[in-house]
Length: 603
Image (cartoon, rainbow, N blue to C red; front, side, top):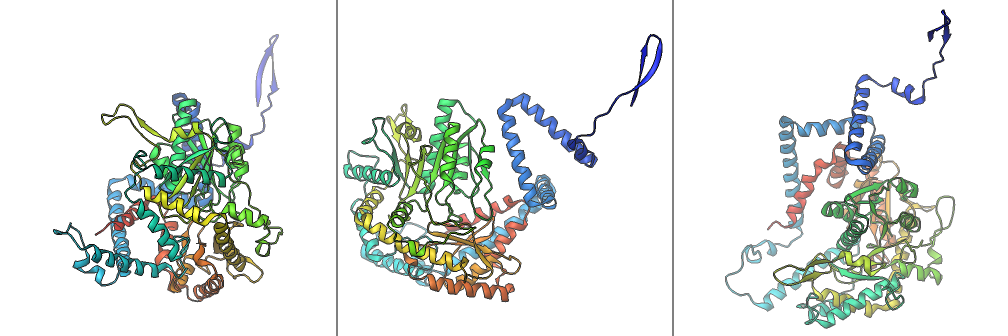
C-alpha cells in the first residue's frame, strides 16, 4: 500500500491506490483451487491452439465451448459431472469392458423383443419353411403362385394402416389411386435414367416433374431468366436431397472461398439428414436451441454461431418433430448478408404448404383458423421458398404430400452454377467418362414416371381438395388439445401451421407422455415418440380425414388412464426414452440403435 520515494536525500512514504477487484476477479476468488487449475489449463490450451491453427481453429473451439456451457447449464452441474465421469470411465480398460458387456446384453434383449414383435405381425404360413427363402430355390417357381402369395401379403399389410390410425407413412391411401401408380411404374420398371438414349420418355417426365416443382415453389426457370434460373434434380428421398444440397454448398465454398473445414448452422429441430450429411462429408453441424414454448429458433443465436467457416444455414418448413415453420425469411436473409447458402427443407410439408396458402387466400379455411390472442398468431404461412432471395436450395418430397410412390423427392437450386457442384464426374475412369447427378448411378425410372403420372392426374384441383381435408383435420386436433375445452394435462408445442401437431405433458410426473402413446397404441393409434422435449406427434394424412373426433376422444381417455394407472405404462417406449434421458452420455445408446437396424435385415 505504501512505497518509499527518495527525493533530495529525504525519504517519505506515499500511498499507491489499489484498484477495486473486477467482477471477474471476484468470481475467480470464489472458485476452488481445482477449478482454477482446470481453467488455467484450458486457457493455456486455447493459446496454444490459436498459435497452432490460427483464428479459425480458435473460433471453432470457442463455439464448441459456448455450446458446452449452454448444455451444462441446461443439464445441471451434477448431470454434467456424471457425464464426464462416465466419459472417463469408458476410457479405462477395466470399466470399458464392463460397460460394453452390459450394453451388449441390453442390445441383444431389445433386438430379440423387436424381432419377436415384428414376427408376430406375420401370419403363421409366412413363418413356415415353405414361405421362407434364405437360399435361392433350386428350381424355378410358378409366377402365378408367387403373385397370389404377394397379393395376400399386401392385403394383410394394408389391414395394418388402412384404418387411418398411423401417423404419416401412408399419405393418400385410396386403393384405386395406388393401383394407378403401380401400373404406371410397371410400364417403365426396366427403365434407367442413366441411359437417356434408351429411355427418352423417362428423361422427359423427370424434367417436367422438376419444372412443376420449381413452379410450385415460386422459382424462376431458364424460360424466365437468361442466366438459367432455378433448376433441380430428382432424388430417392428427402435424406438424399438434403445430402446433395449440403455437398453442393460444401464443394462450392471449397472451390470459391477455399474453406476446408465447412460448417452448417441450423436449429436443433432440423432433420437428422443434416447430421448424416455432416458425418458423410466431413462437415461440422452446429445446432442452435429453439424456444421451448414456441419451437422457434432465435435468429440472433444463429448469427452468433456463424463463423468464417460457415457454408450453409438451414431451416425447415415445417420441421419434422413439431410441425413448426422456422423463420425462413430472417434466416435466409442472414445467410445472404454473410454471403453463404441457405437451404429450406420442405421435405415433410413442402407439397402441402403452397396449397394451404391458396386455400387461405380463397377463404376456404377461415372457419378453422385459430383466433389471435397474446400467445397464438393467426394462421398465416410465412414465406419459405424461392420468393426469398437468400434461399439458394430447397428440398421437397413428392412421396409424401405429392402422393407419389416411395422414393421420390426433388432438390432445387437457385442457379445452375450451384447445382453443378452436386454432380460427380470422373474423366479418367477406364470405363469411359462418367458423370451422375445424384448419389446413385442407376435409378428406377418407373418411380419418376409414376410420380409424373400422379401429379398430372391430380392437378391443382386434386391437390387443393386433398389439402383442405388434411388441414381441417389437423387444425381440429390442434384446437381440440389446446382450445377452451382442451385436454387437461397436455399442451401443443408452438403454433403448427401444416399437417403435424406435437403435444407434451404439462406435468410429466403426473402424466408420462410416452405412457400416453402406449395407451393410444392399445386403441390402434401409432404415434411418433419424440425427445428434447419429451412429446408425441401425429402427422395427419388423407387417411385421417373424418377421424379427428375419434382421435381426441381416445387421447383424452389415454391421458386419464395414464394419470390413474402410471405403473401400467412404465415399459416400452417410456422405458427406452426414460433410459435415454437418465443416462448422462447418450452415445451409450448407439450400439442399441445399431442393433435395431441389424434386426431389420435378419432372416
